[in-house]
Image (tube, rainbow, N blue to C red):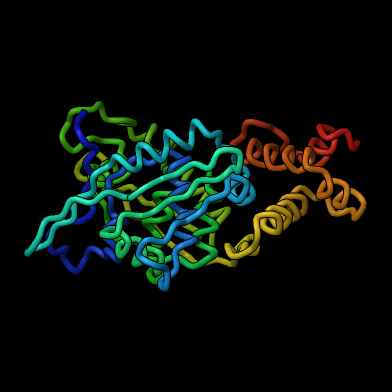
Length: 314
């Protein structure tokens, strides 16, 4: 089997390309599950960590922050694929081949996995984390579209400007893994209307609704055909308070649950106490919120009432 090769950087990027970290521009196609693992892992990194530090990820922690549920099979497939990918880093002096993990261990019956990073890739991850606040990492976890996660990561590089640089559509598609630079795989969303509906519009909506940035995009033509895209950026007050990643899993889950209930308009103390005190109701709350966000549940008029009915509380 050929290794999955990911280009982390290019030789001597020109000044117009803002590239805080090589991984930011990587052309990898991480699934939503892999992105959750990736961003959660970033949140746990500390500069004073030992070189052989093991990072324990409890599945309940991820569920508490994202509202999504991943089973062991999905997680094992996700980390196996992430660990098999070879990253290339090249400058004028050296060329490196890097891999993400030294080791991943699943602890049976504990609902957790332990990750040990490969030493050479650690500096790239630490540098990447420095470009994200705690809120931004939290926001990245809350976005359900993998394209929204990647575009948020991209525009965050330009958060001190009004716009990003202009990205040729071919380059953006390669960064989002919609187009194989070697032409071995079919290109996705070749029609511009498909690209807008399935990628750009969803990303703009989710990033603007759930993060500290309000974004939009401009499609630019060369002749009669669209050739490039540029994102506009404006800072905004976060829609919700960030959850400190240092909180225990139970506190983070309760904090997020209260936010979800407030969003649904459920503020009566006795209802809040009943839901927070029942594990089954909490699981239903996170599932319902995720289905509502991804439009798998339609409830435009009274989503809070629908949730209470599902729980048998109305």
